[in-house]
Amino acid sequence: MTTKGQNKSYDYFSANAQVAEFEEQLLQSQQRIAELESLNAQLQALARSESIDDNTAKFAVPIDKIVCNPEQVRRYFDIDKLATLTASIKEVGVQSPLWLRPEQDGKYLLIAGERRYRAARNAGLMEVPALILNVDDASALKLSLLENLQREDLNPIEETEGILNLLSWQMDCTVKEVIALLNRKAHLDKKKVEWSDENTENVFRKQWEIVESVFMTVGKLSPESFRVSRLPLLNMPIDVIEVLRSGQIEYTKARAIATLKDKAKRASLLKKAIAEKLSLADIRDWIKETKDQEPPSLKREFQDISQKILKSSQWSDPKKAKKIASLLEQLESLLAD
Image (tube, rainbow, N blue to C red; front, side, top):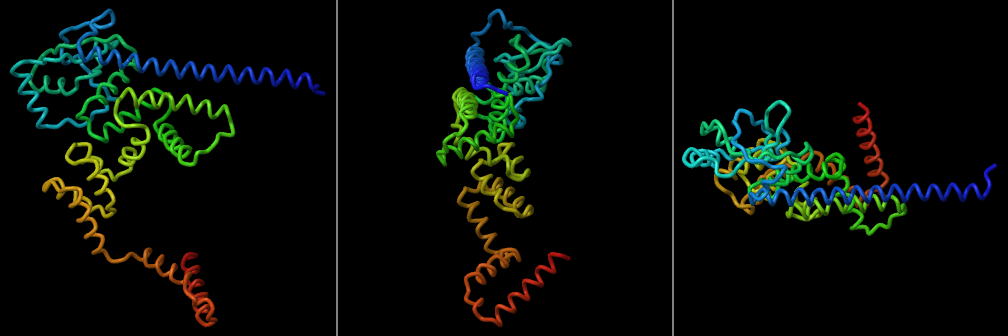
């Protein structure tokens, strides 16, 4: 039999374990925030070419020893801008060093400067100036993400993916879990829900502190504006995403075009919007006109008729009610088949 004193002892140790667990979570949260601040400070120093210290050295590196980062957030490189940079490099060389991390096989992982690397390769250079950073895999990835996210020419799709990846790495969870956390916070703010579980609230609060530190460091958008204006971009049709990724159209126009369900009409509007540089108002007018010309769908007709039947007084007429019942039987039979 368990005595009252034994229960108190159990409660005491259980409470102590919970406190210890929370303190550990708090410490991890503070460490992750401090780490991101440190990486950002290193990034700013690198950008000013001030970080030639014990962990950084400047070299001329053979271009065939450089490996592009597969986790690079930037995937599209404007052909015309790349050609202009290539011509400049042919004339004056690479003016700003690439950031590299040494690999075990004698290669170097590219952390920042892929556009310069591509242009230098196109220009026929055999080697390029580089800063060699002795950082671990995680720090290399985060530095690369931060460097790209703080540039102004990143397109909205790449920026959205980059922020999600940085949040995922910083919080040690999946991208889906990051999105769920953003939506959960919005729900709590809207409903002003009170937590029933203090431990859950504490864990959530620590997670949210990391989220806020990431957005503050990146310096673009707030968590809520990111959730509302950027996350929906990832749910657009792939043809719209690819056009947006290539920088051929603004994201507000892309979101409007994505509302067209018909693939052929959407492709036609994308082509027209790019070629004729349509405004957002022009695009919306085109979509409205197209939708007005469409015949009503069977599904929409059924919904309209159902609403009319529910609101009508036909149910009080026995003959009409009998006919409605007969039609319902036919529908049920059709569904069964």
